[in-house]
Length: 82
Ligand SMILES: [Zn+2]
Image (tube, rainbow, N blue to C red; front, side, top):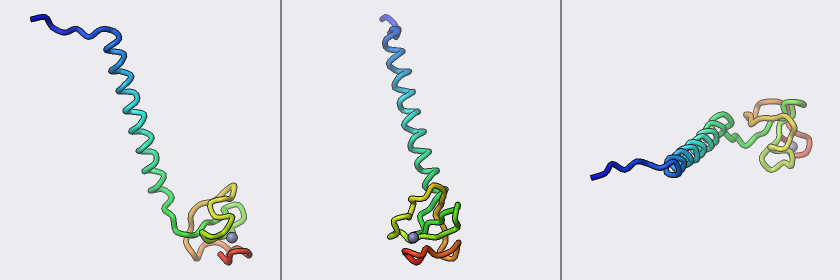
């Protein structure tokens, strides 16, 4: 009985599969980490101006600088009422 020696093509295939799986795992891990870092609170703080927006506001998650915040952080937006 002959031992099965993998050819270069077979080895390449396995390396490629391993790299793809690793890449996929990294993408999933990054997504989970981002979700943990910025939990949605329903309020968005523009960290450049210090103005807070609600989820209904056009500026919610739509400012150059910002992060989710608590309802008592920053100043209430004049449009949505913060
Ligand atoms: Zn607003």
